[in-house]
Image 1: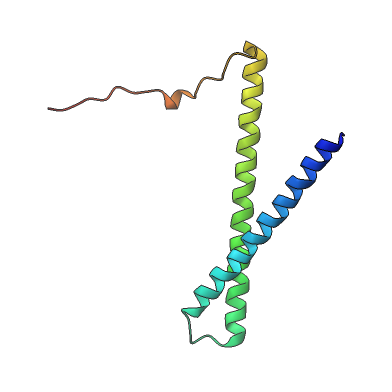
Image 2: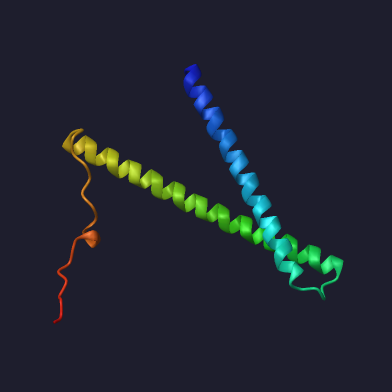
Length: 107
């Protein structure tokens, strides 16, 4: 691997690390705002609710990132398949569900 590729990979990993930590911190802030609305909770209850809130948020964020990664890979694969089959100048056609449908205009 060349030095440029290694640098790019390292920067991408660092960016991912920082973005993920920012997401976890965002979840913590949201959990605190949520429990601030529940003044009757004891300290232990508040900590439990915040812990569960953060855990659920992190799970949801991770699932979303996995879906985005999978979609990106599928898109890249489709583009590569279309380019290989049709030559470099061709672009993949949109799915049939994106086709324009006639629109009726009522007077």
